[in-house]
Image (cartoon, rainbow, N blue to C red):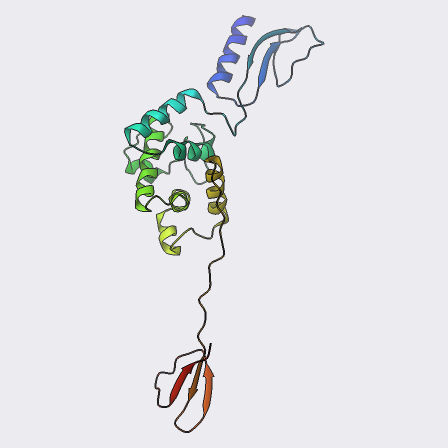
Length: 226
């Protein structure tokens, strides 16, 4: 019975896709204990060890194969999809955001419906819809990665509204994080404010007016002084 409990617990850990190294052991009293350290001084029976690479680097093999297959099928960039998946969910198919985005590619309900996804928790459906949506945005914004990522994170409407990357801290941090995963750097420069023109207007009566507004009725002389 004890051994069965150990096997069940180990299977649960593997199914949960834990990323930290864990040791499943049985103590002197027959209790199952989970720990991230190995007590060398004790006489506990070590049952099994579950270990994963650090979250920032680990790509579960079966998800990597799915992404490779789907990006080849849809003729799209594998590096971009992997970076987005890692930033969105760390490859957790059960991830749910506070805004209701679900799965590995964090699909919102409307986006999932747009690409025919029935179950957003299904890894294959979720990844394929994410690949299709990223490719659509990438082509719409003519291969501009920051704009593609901005639209994926904040929506196409936000990119259109601001005619570029929206001034949202979350979105800009997201772009930096994804592009860093791809080995790319990106920095945002403050928008250049258009230079205000200053006009010198001399009326027919000889009065001089300095203004930044173009006079509606020019009856005298006008010059730009900056």
